[in-house]
Image (tube, rainbow, N blue to C red; front, side):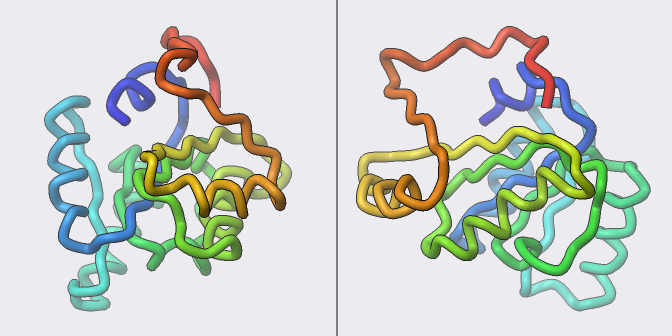
Length: 149
């Protein structure tokens, strides 16, 4: 994940994950690796705190936001050009909404799925609906820092 963030040119990024308890760990890893603020939103936060954090992100005071599927629908941030799925969405419609964050208003963006062997069956289902190019560890392309989202 960090190599993607360091290797891709992007305006803003959203990182989706499934288990609420891991969000702060992911945000901390991003902040420590990039040396910049990373917004972390979850459903345990008060609504006023989530709105405050989302406004910071919209104002571009942070380039990266970490969230569960709480932000998969209903947000409109045109400058998101990179989506990283730290965990694969458990439902194809949720996946559709997640990846839709990277292509708002006829723009283009990049979406990365970080997969493990336990994701194989869900990936097969998603592959039937979406154009997904899978890279195995041994054939993984190197991200050279100039790949543009």
